[in-house]
Length: 121
Image (tube, rainbow, N blue to C red; front, side):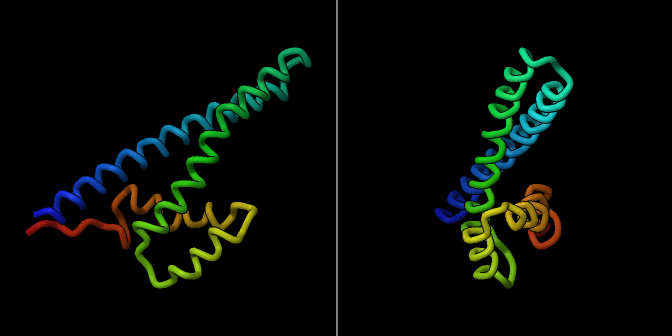
């Protein structure tokens, strides 16, 4: 019974993290609009728009980076845990984190593939 409560609370934690990740996605979209507006605006407005774009993009970037590490550490389901750990921690450009996001985190958010929740019979 105690383990069921633990797993239920962890599911709630990940649901909240996934919801925050979705919110960060909306922030990144807003940052894109600010960046485009900065490119199209005059010099006086351009700096304000660029600063706004960075302010909107930075939390999304940092939280996505953290969620990749937390997910790999706690919820990874696969055969290459050591490989992913090395790629996530050593590789600095961010491409492997993006690939991990699409291969593991998004399927976990949608509960599909290897992260499918078994049906209760």
